[in-house]
Amino acid sequence: MEMDKLVSLCKRRGFLFQSSEIYGGLNGFWDYGPMGVELKRNIKEAWWQDMVTGHDDLGTLPNAPSPYQMVGLDCTIILHPQVWKCSGHYDQFHDYMVDCKQTKKRYRHDQIEGRWVEAKDKKVFVTSASTGEEAEAEVEQKALKFFNLKKKYADQLNYDGGLICLTEIDDFSQVLGPDAKELGTLTEPREFNLMFKTFIGALGGEESAAFLRPETAQAIFVNFKNVCDSSRVRVPFGIAQIGKSFRNEITPRNFTFRSREFEQMEIEFFCHPDESQKWYQFWRERRFEWYIKMGLASDRLQLREHDPEELSHYSCGTADIEYAFPFLAEGDYGELEGIAHRGDFDLRSHTEGKLVREGDGFAVEKDEHGQPKYRGSGKDLTYRDMVTNEKFIPHVIEPSAGADRATLAFLCEAYTEEEVPDEKKGKSEVRTVLQLHPRIAPLKAAVFPLVNKDGMPEKAQEIYRTLKPHFNVFYDDKGAVGRRYRRQDEVGTPYCLTVDGQTLKDNTITIRDRDTLKQTRISVEEAVDAIREKINNA
Ligand code: ATP
Image (cartoon, rainbow, N blue to C red):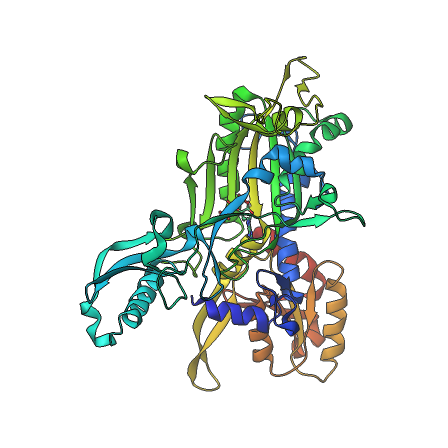
C-alpha cells in the first residue's frame, strides 16, 4: 500500500487533518476529523472494555497465573515537578540533536544515516534523514551532486561500507549533512529534554516551572496508595489510564506515528515479586493477541524482546509489539506498544528519591554533598496483603500503548484497493475499502432508500431513527446507490441497509456486507439484533 493514498483518504474523508492547517499547520500535531474521532474513540473504548470494565475479576484468563483485578484512573496532565525528578525524566528523558549551521535544520542524532563515499580523490560521509533503500538512493543523488557528476557516472562513486548511523562518526568535518551543500556544517550532538515546560501561576519564575506529562504512567504510581486505600484492591491488580501525553520530539514524522501530542493507553500491573516473571509473560501474550483479535494481520505484527543494552534505566525486561508500517523501509517495524518489567523501581523512587543503578540493584542518587539528589515523597508505598499480612513493594509490569499509533496501524492494515467488475460500464473498476474490524469502524451501518420516491425515503428514515440509539448510523439518499456504497466502503462502514420496492410490501431490507459484498434480506424488526450479532461475531 502506498502511504500517500492513505494520507489523502484520511484528509478527504475526515479522518485526520494537520493541526492549525489554515495557518500553515503545526509540525507534529494532528487533529482527528469526524470519522477519525469515532475510529480513535472506538479503539480506546475497545481497549478499556477488554482490559478494564469487561475484565472478569473473579475468573482466571488462559495463561494467567491467577485471577486479578482491574481498575481505572484519570489523572492530570501537569503533575508536581518532583514526580519527574524522582522518575528520572528530568535528568534522563532526552534525545541528542544535531543542528545544521547552513540550513538551520535540526535532526535527531540517531536518526541520520549515511555512507562513506569516495570520488575524485576525496572521501566524505554523505547522510540522509531517510532510512533503508530510500536513504541509499538519496545518498547516491547527493553524492553525485556534491562531486559534480552526472547520473550516468554513478559508477565513479566508490562506497566504503553500507549505511551506518551518524552516531558511529566521531569527527563531523567530513560529514555532508542531510540537507547541506557543504561539508562540516553539523554541530556536535547536544542533549535535548523532550518534556514541554510551562509555568504555574502568574509569577513565571523557575520555582513555578512545571512539565506536561511525557507519559501517563507516573500519575498511576503517585496514586498507588490512594487506589489501594479507596478500592480494596488486592495484589495482583492493574490500574489503567488513557490520556494525552506530550513529547517535544526533535523530528516528528511519518504522519501521526511520531507526534508531539499524542494519547497513551497504559496499565501498571502490580504483582508479588516472586510472580512477576509469569505476569510479564502473560501481559506480553495478552496484549499481542489483542491486536490480532482487533484485526492486525499477524505477519505484519511482531513481538520483539529488547536486547539487554536497549533496556531503559528502570527495566529488567521489555518487549515491544511492533507493526510493519508501510512508510518504513522493507523489513523495518515500528513500535505500537512496549511491555516493560519495571520491578519495584517506580514505587521505590517515589518513596526514597531518584534511583540509579548500583551493582545488581538500584540506590538513591546522591549529590556532591552525599545528600539525595532528588528527595522522594517519604510516603510509605509498601503494600500489606490484607489476608496474609505480608508486607512488600509490588513489582510492576507495564503494557504501554499509543492510541494514535494503534489507530494508524489499523488504518494502514484496513486500506485495500480491489478490482471489481462494473456491470453497467462492462469493465472493472477499483474499489477502495477500509476493512476495519466492525467494532472500531466509525460508522456501524448506513441506511439508503434505493430511490427517492414511492415512500422509500420515509421508510429509510424511520429505520435510521430506530438504529441510531444503538449504533452510529449514517443516512444517505444522495446520488446513485452504487456510489453511496462506495462512499461507505471508503470509511469502512461494515453494513449498508437498503430500502427498496419489496420493503414496502413485506417490511424486509437488504443488508450488504462491506467485505464479501453479499446482500441478504432481513426483516426491519430484526435489524438492530442482526447488526449487533454481526459486530459481536466479527
Ligand atoms: P519511540 O522509541 O518510538 O520513541 P518510546 O519507546 O519512547 O517510543 P514509550 O515511552 O514506550 O515509547 O511509550 C509508549 C507508547 O506510546 C509507544 O509504544 C507509542 O505507541 C506511544 N508513543 C510514544 N511516543 C510517541 C509519539 N511521539 N507519538 C505517538 N505515539 C507515541
